[in-house]
Amino acid sequence: MNKRRIVITGMGAVTPIGKTVPSMWQSIQQGKSGVAPITLFDASSSPVKIAAEIKDFKPEEHGIDPKEARRMARFTQYLLAAANEAVADAKLTKEDLAAEKTGIIAGNGLAGMDIVDASYSKYIECGKRRASPLAMPELIANEACANVSIALGITGSAWTIATACASGTDALGLALDTIRSGRLDICLAGGSESGVTEFSIKSFAGMHALTDKFNGAPEKASRPFDKDRSGFVMGEGGGILVLEELEHAKARGAHIYAELAGYGASADAYHITSPRPGGETCAKALTRAIQDAGIAPTDIQYYNAHGTSTHLNDSTETAMLKIALGEHAYKIKVSSTKSMTGHCVGAAGAIEAIISTLAITNSYFPATINLDNPDEDCDLDYVPNVGVSGNIDCAASASLGFGGHNGIVILKKFRD
Image (cartoon, helix red, strand yellow):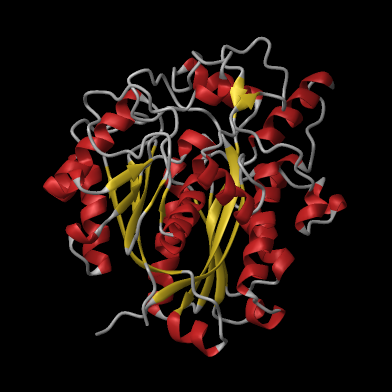
């Protein structure tokens, strides 16, 4: 039986390097870093003083009522902003959104950490006598997805995925499978995150996951595959892709960016934060994605890496590519756009799938910036420092999350 084909008909993004898809893509082409000193809290007592924040975010500029925004965590605002852009880009009507077979699937890893920080501080200040009744509905993981469903009138389904750094990619994979099954025709899929808070930064710093070596040169801090990498940089943002069954998209005359052709997942079953050494288990995710897409490993031309700028991830991911692709791993271009955006955790997979889609449509391989001194264990073509032009028919975008959650999607140039 032929699979229903799923295409991308709209995209929206709020990121540290651009608060819309066009502005983000311009920064990608310029090799611009979004990492800077932290402004969202007083970081003077923190060993990590830098992050990839979204500067000057104004909800009203993204179609969000400021009064409503005051009762939303940042990760909710970012998801709604991205959804509004994606819906407008896809030219979806109210009737399209309210249709029985329209849904939303959104991921996040940390949920409303900004609400946790603010609400608990007030709780302590009042002598632990009273906790805010608004705190829980604002901070729980499903609230971003729920608020988008409410704002846009989506009643078909609304699901939340929480697989740490793989959440956004897994949301795309679940949406792909759900549309293929016939249960949905349109699905808004992606993720959001707002992890730049005092508690989360200090906690990640305490486990030595974040770099504290570049507080004086923030733009140099995220350096995947480089010998001098020393940890990831916390980012924040939101990304949504409108996924649609091909015939449904054609019937309404939708613009088609690319095809979402396959998805694969695996679990390391090894450690709560570290990847399983050797890359064998995460290689299964890529192999499964390739099989699901009905392509050969040699069809892949570009791989948007998880590439976190940690010692363990970057070497393991390099080894994984060699296992899954064999000698072809040396013939493709690999880049980590986290070198520019920082690590947006639950939003990362969606943002990077959008970047990969634009790489296909613009025939452009994004760079890995700050790759000045390649690690000897990282010996592939990572497109160092400057992006290059070139045809891309097929790309893979990967997310390898804390706890061993591995998710990878395959994107293809659309051909009818």
